[in-house]
Length: 289
Image (cartoon, rainbow, N blue to C red):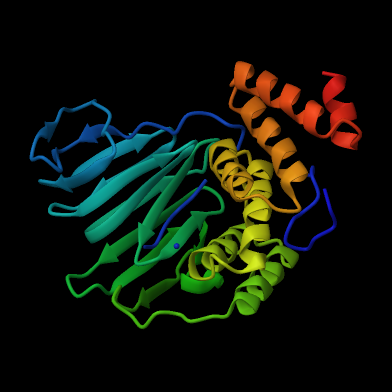
């Protein structure tokens, strides 16, 4: 891969949230106790998996995902989405207590544009008020909160912090500032913060050359973390627009397809790659497969 700071070599290989690396399906959220209703008002049976969409806890109710238990206080409202091996629980109001350890599948709790990532076995509480203010209270272990704009703070057992309302003045950073923030985070080993900053660059300055290059960087970061589905999305998004890193992106796309087990698509992509880039080092590697 070309030596761009915003397009890393291969390999080595925000709304508040929590996260957890081999590519597997997202962990199902299974109702362990209490009662939930979905966005259409239908009850979710005990021991059933909660589908994507909006959910409300009718009483104190818990879900289990692998080794993690999340308990919702009565009236708590949230939305659930899945992307590859990541399950995101976006909390709009109420209280959620989480107890458990990160697994190979990622669980992310989101509130007000920020991400909360458990670094180890942990116990913490997220509480969101009707006014949009929310708090994080860490009872055990530690978590990393990535705020709007990519700033990351580590919160350890015994720490509590209250954050402002969801409705806040937008952050207006230039493309260069977003890129600098991403580079600083990567240099510090804060990959979550780097991902958030690259996403901010792309979302706020889609037409900037740095934003286009950041798509490849973002894809590589996801792939290096074992998140092949979002990696594939960003590689394909870059290839759809084209650019000087097309060869790198096409090779990354092949790696992502391989990780996802999409064998026939990988084979077709390899054939197309070798035909288009016959003399590159990537082609030599692919011919050996």
